[in-house]
Image (cartoon, rainbow, N blue to C red; front, side, top):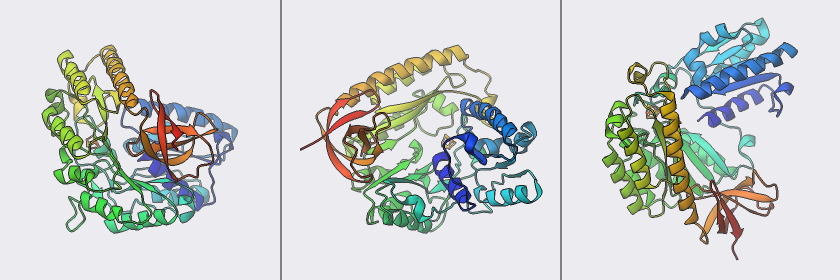
Length: 427
Ligand code: SF4
C-alpha cells in the first residue's frame, strides 16, 4: 500500500516539475512516506528525520514532508517535535500536497492535512507515462478497515473501510493494460470484503471476473485477505479464473484459539485449517503465505507451541513474522500481561528457524519443474541475469539480460535456493 501511495505522491510532485533523484543530498524536497503498523518502522522514521535535519542545515531551502500512517497518527505532534519539518500529510489527503506546497512557497507557512473524512477522493490516476515499460502494477481497490483486530492501528490511521467504485478501478486497469502492463495486484487492507458495504457495487469475486475480461492483462493477484471473509465463492474462483494466480497471502497471526480470540480475529485455527484444505483441493499447487505475531499479550508457551504446530501442519510457502509491539489507540495496549522482550525474541527466532526449513523443503519441490514466469527486469544480484516471478509468486533469476520486461517465458527450475529459485531457459 505504501509503495502504491508513494507512486501517486511522485506523480503529484512530477506535475509540479519535481523529478526523482537517487541521492537525498541532491533533493529539493524530501517526502517520507511512513508506516506505523509496528514500533520498529516508527523508530526508523524518527532516526531518518534526524539525518534529514543535517541535510536541511546544509540546504535551508530543502522542503521536508512526512506522510502516511505515522503522519496520520501523530499529526501536529510531528510539526511540534521537528521544527524543521515543513508539512504533514495524512493517509487520505495526498492531493492536499499541492495546497500545502503552495502555502509554503507563497507564505513560508508550515502545514498539515490529516482528515480521514474522505472529503477528497484519495485516488490519483497515474498518467500514461508512468505506466509505460512496466510489467506489473498495483491497483488500490479500497481503503481502511472495520475489523479492529486488537493489535492493529490500521482502522485508526487509514479510517473505516471504503471501497473504490469498480468503474474507476476497471478504467485504471484498462489504461495499464493499454500501456503493456501484464499483471495487476489489487490492493486493500481486507480485499475479500470489497463492495460489501456499498449497495449495488460489485462483490470482490465479480470484480475479479471483470478484470479477467480485460484484454492484455495476463495475471491477477490480490492482497490482503482476511481469513474470516474468505468466501466459498472466492475459493472457487481460484479453480475457475485462469488469470487468477495460484497464490494467496492469508494472515493467520497465531495458532492458538485463545490468542486469536484476544486478537479479535473472528476465526479459529480449525476454521483456518478448513479453508486451507479447501483452497488446496480447489487449486492444487496453490502457494500460501501468512503473517504471524509472537509475544502477543498473554501468549503462553502452550499458545506458542500451538503456533509452531500449525506452521508445521500447513507448511506455508513462506511467512512474515513479527514481535508484538504496543500501538497507540489499540485495545491490546491495555492488556496487562505483556510478554517479556527476551521471551518474544526467542520465540521469533524459533518460529523463523522452523519456517526457513519448511521454505527450503518446499522450494526443493520445484527442482526440475518447468514453469511460466513473467519477466520483471534484471536480477538484483547479477546484472547478467533477468528476474521474474512464477504464478505462485516465487522469484526466479535466470541467465540472459535481453528478455523484455513483461514477456512470459518458460523456464526449467535448475536450483532451488533459500529465498528464490534459479532457472534455465527450457528447450
Ligand atoms: S484486518 Fe488487518 S488491517 Fe484490519 S484491523 Fe485486522 S490486522 Fe488491521
